[in-house]
Image (cartoon, rainbow, N blue to C red; front, top):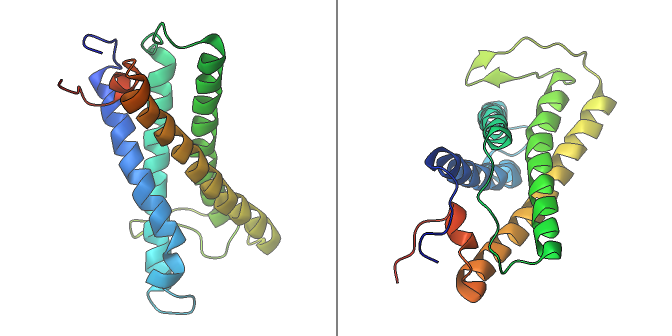
Length: 181
């Protein structure tokens, strides 16, 4: 829909940067055991790379959320009903919540482990004691949140495609590229 209201360039850039980074980071996390099997010399550096990238993505997500809280989104298309608007709002809240929980759980888990965090090689001060049960619980939360985020992303992408290809109501163009007719 030409001339449909859009998110500003900064919000769009953050959206796509975070989307690509999350896709890569989730794939990286799911493949950690194949990339560097447990007990191998490369394991620690690969895990710390995952942690470092996760911290950067977590900070980008906070910036995105702060930007979003200070900048109203474009209006919904007139063709979108009230229940669809509520569902979209709750879907976005769930995405933000899981995007915040995922790196937070990983960061917290690492601070209750004897390994701690090396941020791109620089050791961060550990503030938690080595508590294997706390680490295990937080690490499980990290893993389950990653799977939940994957499901939410799949739904988000499916609805974006629906709006772009079926509804053609301009909703996709709010965050997506301008499509030429």
